[in-house]
Length: 145
Image 1 (cartoon, rainbow, N blue to C red):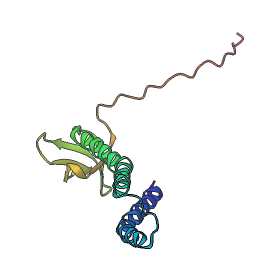
Image 2 (spheres, rainbow, N blue to C red):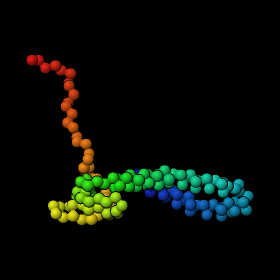
Image 3 (cartoon, rainbow, N blue to C red):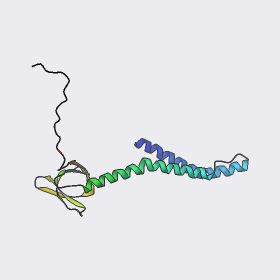
Image 4 (cartoon, rainbow, N blue to C red):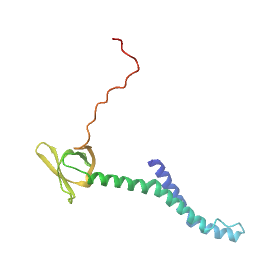
């Protein structure tokens, strides 16, 4: 994905760098009697297409990821096991609704206060349903008794 974004960035820069040179080339071509370059509308339409591509490749996925992280941080509960952006793993011991911070116990008797936004993931939910053991499906063979 990053390689595609890098190539796309280089293509955008090439188009933008060529936009200024196109006007000079068109003026020189008109003096020499050569047919003119594509109109300014064509250049503007190319910029619009490039912006739309940037929106769908970069901006939209990033905003979805930000929204998902915000919902995760807002749903924190006491007892959840979390991992912070710095790699600290611990159990949430205190959550206040209108606070930017939560208290996390990282070792028995050791609590730290961390900013909610630094929580990278919730590893274990306190109220998560248990993983029920599903019996294996019958193989179709009948046992002889």
